[in-house]
Length: 66
Image 1 (spheres, rainbow, N blue to C red):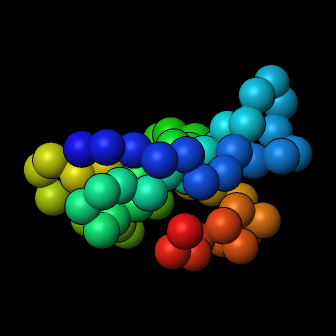
Image 2: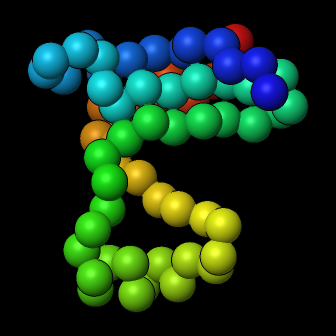
């Protein structure tokens, strides 16, 4: 999988995280904050092999096809 940096959060500290990447497989990779709230995780009902991260609303503008 080849990752292309799309954007890092310009308001983050210390350095551009959360971050969005576009892949060469027609998908996205999102780097964000770990979700560790048990109630939120139970609501997500994630199957084995999947995970979830949280990103701020301000990052949605970067979800475009470069």
